[in-house]
Image (cartoon, rainbow, N blue to C red; front, top):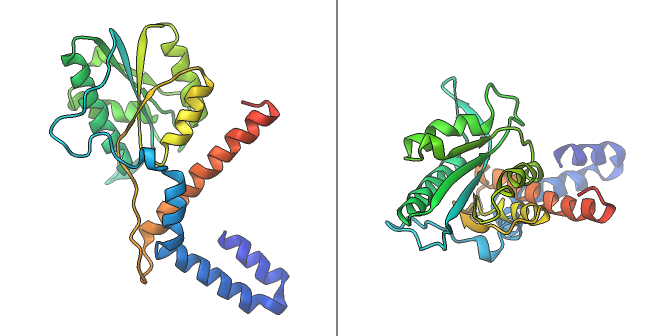
Length: 242
């Protein structure tokens, strides 16, 4: 977007001050939260704006079946003090997936946690492999943990998970991811004939005001990424690519 405004200023020199003013206004609306909040509301429809856990001591009851797969989608990795760790939003996904596993096991069913995430950032390990120790530390047994570490996109998450779960036709699915990611994830999972129960791990928020905030720009970028991904899904379906 910034590059687009620079290009407009170069090509439309007679109006470059108006272009600069428009760019400044747009980025202020994003950074101050007014426009980024609207984008985030589009990316996070009301049905997904309440985290499944909500910080309660006990989770709401789920209709676990004799076989249940809790599918946790990746959300990136980052280096902190030289160590590869999950990105911030992923910690909430790990916490919810592990608590759902404990609830499922207590209900007496055969439960497993499928972690889906490859290495789109080209770090030293795939997302699924990086998250595994955190899930083990949170109480998920190693024999109940399935690592799908090849997928690079949400569409590939759904495709690769489908290959794992369609072998067990009686398996109930619970899909764990963040609110902003859930609409696109549900589209892709439905595309592969899966109907998971959505379990929202966390919701993004912006702070509206006069002062610009970096986190509001990050939220706007996240929202735009998801909205473009949803539009891409429908375009690809229309032309037969999905």
